[in-house]
Image 1 (cartoon, rainbow, N blue to C red):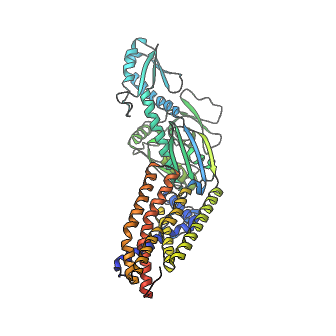
Image 2 (image 1 turned 120 degrees about the vertical axis):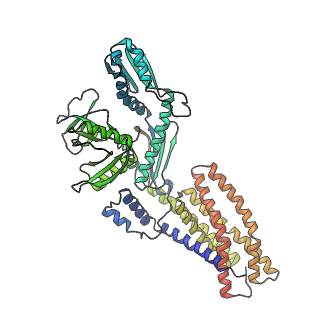
Image 3 (image 1 turned 180 degrees about the vertical axis):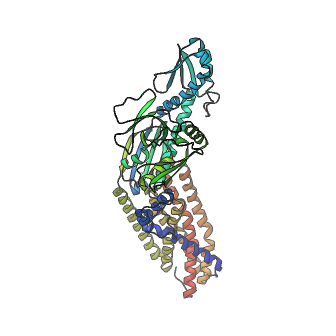
Length: 555
């Protein structure tokens, strides 16, 4: 066998060692997973670590590769939810937020329209009464000027609101084009917020996708129950900054029009009457991080975007000496008195937080508030025992398949069959290394793809060995026969793998779900099988022939 250049041998064995190194963490799955989750939590907490997190982080050395193959819902167990987004809530909130703009617009022409008063109406409709009917045309013109073009492909040339008159009342509601565009934005925003919330807590490879017009499918491996998942994504984390009208100890206090009675989070028995319309909302936050206040207690720092910073600064400048409620999910977590103008849009939320609570609150605020309430139509928990059974079945299938392949190759090709099995083991390790590096989720069909790859990966060696046998019958030396066998069989090996690769790629791009899982492991297996069958096996045989230098070989 001709001598292989040193750089080729070094490259082959270097890739093998890298594959083994990156596949190794999967042998210690639970330990590495706890380490990775701890690192993610510490990073999310801006470097603040609990003793439990530090202990979990110490389970695996930081210098070692720590990427592992994420297990799918069918292998690991987890939670399945089907949620319906209540988009009508967004219509109501959007129209409700227009009242200050409508009021200010009509205030400029009060001499023509008279007094302006908001009337009771159904959700999603704003009714405004004017006292001077003769000024209705001017009022309509002013309110219509508040309309803006709809930003969507279906709404080109249409405005976002429809304004009409009914007696002495002006009626404002969203146009049909704006409702369609709002539906699209609401669902997309909900998808992104759910994905960020799930990812922030270290959960790996969730399935979060839209179904139908207003439904979202959520499947998260590793979550203990559907209730736990609902708790994670169902928290609105709606942060608002609202003016305080008065403070009371009477839970039966009736708030005035456009006011709300909210309890204090850390002061039982204390209630705040606040204006319903917030000055600034959490949607205008650009960042939130866990921190500590001047007394060393856990808190949350926040930063507004330019719009929010301007509104926050203007309000604090005009209301010095007045209390200002920081409201989280309809509870007042703090109501500090404004001592001075606060420019720049930066502040801090203090309260009776633990480090874990301040970290969780920062995560929820960074992820943003869900734009609308979600109703869960379907809840299902897949227990880890089902995943354990699936993994055990896959392991059994892999062991049986590997044993039969090994028995056949050794019976057919002796010592060279044993070398093929060594290369096959390296092939499986490299498959797991690649899956770990790219973060591909391993499902039960994926295991089937790996088992099938085990049987198919020895095809190349069968072609090579049969060609070597032919050369040996013609009287070639062992080294020459091996050279010819590897070089001449390469074209046939390429042809057979290209056809398999085309089929796998078609399954990947056209298929979905389990079909794609099978296709991913098949594609990776085809490439790794070619590498191990042709290059790794040849490197092993070169070492054997160089060490033993046999005059004859039996293949």
